[in-house]
Structure formats: structure tokens, C-alpha cells
Image (cartoon, rainbow, N blue to C red; front, side, top):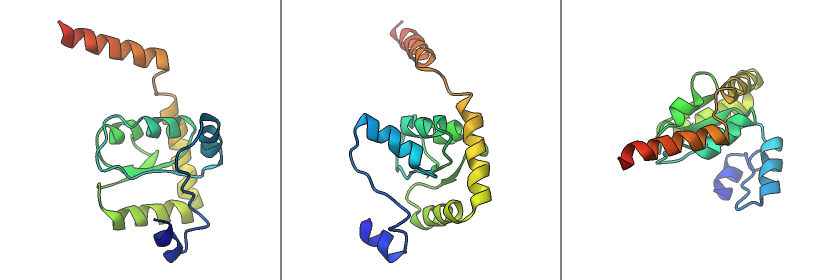
Length: 133
């Protein structure tokens, strides 16, 4: 990945952090301009919700609940495994400040719809009770 980033001239614009402590995660979100989640398979996408909660525009794959989570106007979605489409979407967000700002505004709107931890726990408990009967 690092070689590919260098080859594309993006090595100074993209940071690959690896495993991070909780404090480093918060700092990384705060310093980021965009959140990228190129998952092949996904269920809910908690990290996408975290990025949206921070007001970050998202570039992600159209899998699992991610399209519902992002909604309209908070990010760009590409087909899982479509590396060319991912590259195009990333380049658009990185090079077009107005697009990035519109997507960030969309992320802030989505943030207001995200459930709190208590609400999420209540929903999970209710779902478990429904299937346990």
C-alpha cells in the first residue's frame, strides 16, 4: 500500500496508522480531512459512524449498512473491490475543497441522527428479546 501511495504521489497526503491507542484514535479523527473505509464486507460499520460523529466526510464501499448510515450527502460510495472507483472518489474528495466541505456538512447532519450508546444498547436488547421468544 505504501509503495502504491508513493507511486501515485499520495504518500504525503495519506497516513496509514496501524493499531492505535484510544487517545491516538481521537487525535487521528481530529486531524483527518476525510475518512476512508474500503471494506469488502460490512455489517453496521461502527468506525464509519464514529467518523460521521466527528463530522468527517466518508469515502466507503457500498456494503452492509454503510449506505443507510451515510445517507445522502455525507460521503461517496463505491462498489466493494472496485479499486479504480475508490481512487477516483478519493482524488475527488482530496482535490475538491467545496465537495469536501459539502460532504462534511452532510456528516454533521447525519451526526444528529446517530443513536447514543444508551439508545443503541436499548435497541440491541429489544432485538435480542424479540428473537429469544
